[in-house]
Image (cartoon, rainbow, N blue to C red; front, side, top):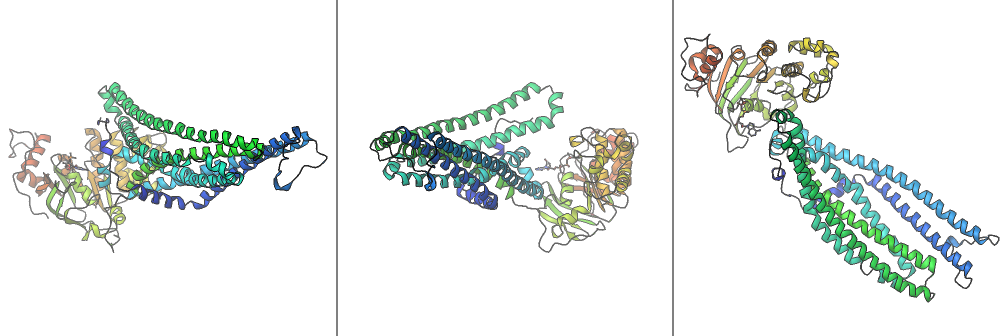
Length: 637
Ligand SMILES: Nc1ncnc2c1ncn2[C@@H]1O[C@H](COP(=O)(O)OP(=O)(O)OP(=O)(O)O)[C@@H](O)[C@H]1O
């Protein structure tokens, strides 16, 4: 298992400023301005209802005070309304209480509608971000995947996308609500008593400064938490996928300990964030309570002097001030959410903005069904351009010709097939299909002409039929069965209780290696591709199954240009020509018979596999492993 103790491998350095990220997030949010405006309307209506209920409670207090002490000023009922002469004090108090209750019921209904609207908005934004990430992931070339880690990519599409989403419904709408609410409260307080308002809010600038400091303190902590999330997912994914290895080597305790260590690091990191939030929030709360002290002292004097009413004055002011403080408290939460969103936005935009390097040139042609001529013209390639994997490689393949490719491990056989698929672009030279440079043709049209079977085939957790029809979902069951017959898969599929409708487990876990390979071959053959690339498709299969697949492969190769990577002489000898690769170069090309005479490597390979049948051939019999090629490569075609 890879070391999962550090997130360094997944770390990328910030490339965008916070301001750039904010602008980008705001423009994303503006795409949802209508539902956001709806949410804002809900929030503001709730503020209005709470003010109404507060005002009515103040009126109630003043009314009770006036009834018990007729010398005190009479209450001011809203909208110039006065209770009917005939109403008893108890009846008036009930009317006031009924109004407050009605407003509370209305507020509850609004909160319900607001929660539904908020959840709908969240889902819309989340789906949009995840779709953008996923779409980009489909377009990106293998260079992107080679450079990054799948755990980090998964975390970006899952956790980070969610954190970006909170910017729209948790920040943008909330910021506007808070600002508007604060303005409304401020307006009311100023209307009631300007000096009292200024005295009570004297500490507010300190709260804003505190929020700014808080943002700076928590941002790095959020970045680190995201990176630790990558490490945790990596540990999880590797342990699930590598369960056989872990169990086979009895390493469960160590892996559990590693996983626990990863979760502990996240817990510690989150605790450090919570700690900062927990320190900051009470300090903010304390500052706001200081305002209350000012109110009780100064406001109390005003009430005693008769300059401020008790209910509609002091009581309402105290509540407004408390609400004002609550809204200021929201700023801490918002600042907290913004920091999390910014860090995640950076990671999400890194994927969405990653350059798509494998693109067709302008005016690229759409390939029709090709004849299948392949020309590899003096190509050079390295995953890292400074470390060539293939160099000076040239050969021609006629339409329908079957080419075997063999060579020592790491000599570049799979890489060559990847270049023909245009998973990567060559660094030098060119590859032509029917005379078209791969870079001059539409990628889809190129890949529709090529069937590919990997060394280890990936299957999806779907039905067998859906897996075979992956490249052509509209294929009929007859066509699927025909492809399966060609790939020698029909018999075993028919024996399954659900036949073609059998749902196969994740990665085809409930199938044998040979069955998986046959399905992969059927999947490639369903496209009826004029070019077939087989990358050591029988490498991990037992001899008996290999024999069956071998026959299927021979049948599949009929009338198709085929490049078949293999180190098995049984496969290679049935091809028209064989290319021997060593250290990224062609060291021999020829038929099986020719190579037995001219290629020492091939001869050794054959001797190792068919020692009895090739007695008498000139090989270095003292060394049983294929040796470096000593004869030069023949002319390509
Ligand atoms: N995605 C990659 N990124 C970087 N280097 C790679 C990548 N894939 C392969 N290589 C390197 O390129 C070289 C050729 O690899 P390739 O898989 O083409 O060899 P191969 O001949 O198919 O080997 P094998 O027979 O073992 O499958 C090796 O040195 C390998 O380490």
